[in-house]
Image (cartoon, rainbow, N blue to C red; front, side, top):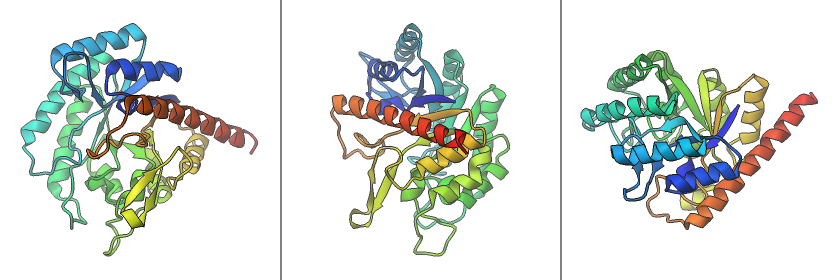
Length: 297
């Protein structure tokens, strides 16, 4: 089992991301966005070649690897009507950069659904098959995240995606079901159940995002918590995963000091760093508690 985090939640700069990783004693990052001196922050697959070269050199000097690429490919900012050449360009840039970094996994999604959608259009499966095959042909493994996308509309939609896109694996996010509607049910859609979703995709799961929160009806939004303190069933999911031999990657994605998709929230970088490190340490404690419980059963 390898511990890491989506390190742009510790710092926008690659220097800060490396520092947070080393502070935790970890050797991996799940790279999403990065910033190097002289260049604007951007997705790792989109930053200029010169910026990427600087980033790669810093990682090599620090002995920190990129376990997974948290790409923006087919994510919630795109619909099936978004220009396809944008996605093709992202893939074309991601593959050689992943190969250079020795990165095996790439997080992808399945486009933002229409507000009233409860079915996945065939074009989504067609596009995801193309994306998946491009990465598989390059010796890389795409993993789909249950998020604000077609595959995240319910566990049934997730399973359908896995069945119709050969070779695709899953990255399970423990908190995303809490704030996503279960579109397999009649309207008004209830929120999803993280444990129920996990049970149906765990055999396809090659990576896990640890995030936790509670849903607050009064503000129609989530309050994010440390792992195991919300409604994400983090302890139960970790226990189930480890008891079934899970030995792959686990990334922290705190969302406590900054929420990646909420542009209204600004965070002090020192607060981001400290929260990220504390989150990682609390996850380590939680995992050790789970292992101890399993060893006494």
